Amino acid sequence: MADEQDRRDDQHDPIRARALGSAPVPLSVLDLATVGSGVTAAEALRTTTELARLTERRGFHRFWVAEHHSMPGVASTSPAVILAHLAAHTERIRLGSGGVMLPNHAPLVIAEQFGTLEALAPGRVDLGLGRAPGTDGATAAALRRTERLREGADDFPQQLAELTRFLDDDFPDGHRYARIHAVPGPVQGTVPGGVQSADRPSIWLLGSSGFSARLAGMLGLPFSFAHHFSAANTVPALDLYRETFRPSAALDRPYASIGVSAFAAEDEKEAHRQVLTGALAMIRLRTGRPGLVPTPEEAEAYEFNEIERDFINSWLANVEYGTPDQVREGLDGLIKRTGVDEIKITANAHGRDARLRSYELIADAYDLPTAQTEG
Image 1 (tube, rainbow, N blue to C red):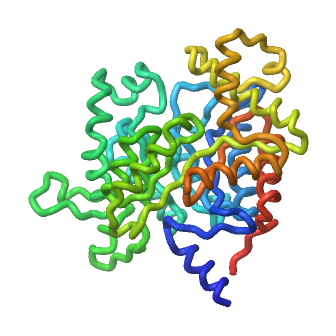
Image 2: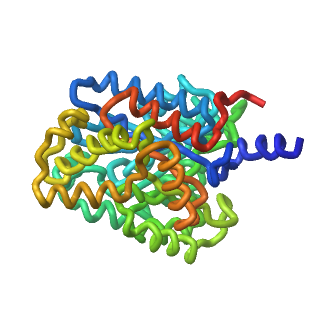
């Protein structure tokens, strides 16, 4: 009975969660709605929906989607739109952005979008925020309608403070935005006859360096680090977050997660075939040739030059892939080295079936429930 009560209490904690099965920490998902060669964006988004439903059944705690732009192989340009769709097709899993790139948007617009999501999926919305553009400089300039991109990143703390006040509807008297309200939001509970939920989206800060780690610590917010593409900075950033953490209304002690590339298959060779597709897509992106995620056959046939081969080896060194037992061993070691409270698994590969199967195998490796039910 005590365990059941603890589980129910954790369901109502917007940030902390309990690990299920034999997992040392809660497992979550970070998805990019990847578009593979020969696959339409509609099919990719259907796979994202299937993945959200699958991971909800298997006891994963969160399902986040990431904002990227001008990348043919990534369909998650509009997290709020995708999350609204996922809210209609899931019941319990927390849904969030991993993240929204705040300098690309007016804070009021994000407060309205995520207030709407909170109304659609009460008590299970996360607002993960980043300060990078999520794209190249030219595209960022088009998004922000300015060439002064550095200003947006430098203004991130002020933008965050403004967004938070819109979400809480607590601008002080005399502020130029004091009479402006994000709707849906708290103002609806203050007007005659108004009733408003006490829940609001949980704010997380995301980062791949020390800036957001320090800011998250100083503000007492949960922090998620992009280990999947900035592994060398993971431990220093997490240490900085913990060292600078100050208790807040959101958290009394630090809570950190990391994004991890992981892929499981029944056979180690097949797992390598699958992760090679994502690695080749990354090479093309990093060399100014963004495209769709190639098929395993295309990746196997590709003739890597020496520089590309070095990149592949370096990239795959930070991907946990192989059989389910190998992936579990790799993830367990990473969790132990970093001391994180939660991991968000991302699987950037070509095929729908292989990606869905990977999450099933990882869930099996950690003895996660075969179906989550209300209790």
